[in-house]
Length: 314
Image 1 (tube, rainbow, N blue to C red):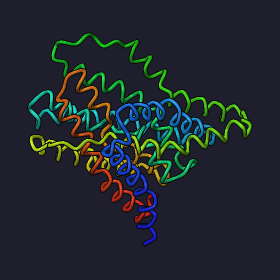
Image 2: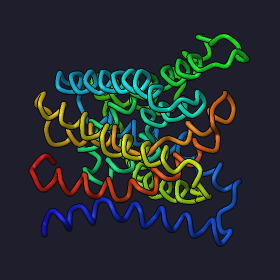
Image 3: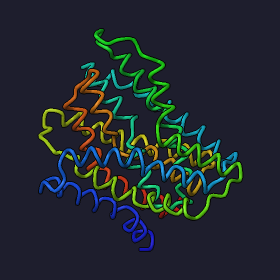
Image 4: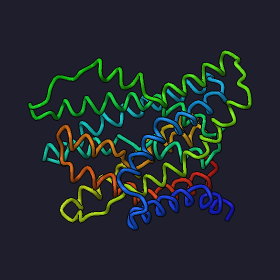
């Protein structure tokens, strides 16, 4: 019963807020302009505050570097496996591109950070912040590579400088690095600075979840039901189970194993739908993949957290 209550208290509040966001959109209390504002607020202010606060509160150790290395390796491996396997089962190139992209690209910034903060608090969320800050640039590179591989011949060559610039200027990465540098250099920030940053970090998860719920738009997906079912199973069950098992075998425990679970168990990132629409791919399938993995993740995340808590992995 204790593990069940822990899971309920840690996971369900986020989905209640997501449901509230969806209801607000249905009642037109939140409109498209509000959603764009929430996105900008989260990515440019609130998540950087989490990144800085977690980096400032932690010290980078060999264990952290080992975790980062594992996460990046597992991320690249998942991309490679999907790239090789999916075309054997999904013959349509545009749909195959979407299934691959939806399979490896997780909503780790918007959803994952909020989940880590809710599960483990500021100190326990530190490993998740570190892995997210390093997985974001790799994810950007792999997404561009995937689009190039499935380019139908109409696109321009990859602008390497633009990719590097987008990674180097990502607010979360900059903030996390600044926090780590302050921690390593021994800089002690006055309360008047660090406390407002922590207060803003605490507001990040509920605001982000509200915006995520407002973006959900369930549409008829009968045409893609088999691909959606396969995509949800791969994204929400098979991939996280395999990576968490590998992490456990390599000796990761508690917050580190929690970070691994969060990094790979999150639903598909909305950027998958955006890139499918603008750079080639089945945009309808991509949008449905984002919606349905987000919806079903409320069950898979609850089950995953409860199971890992029950067997003592958290």
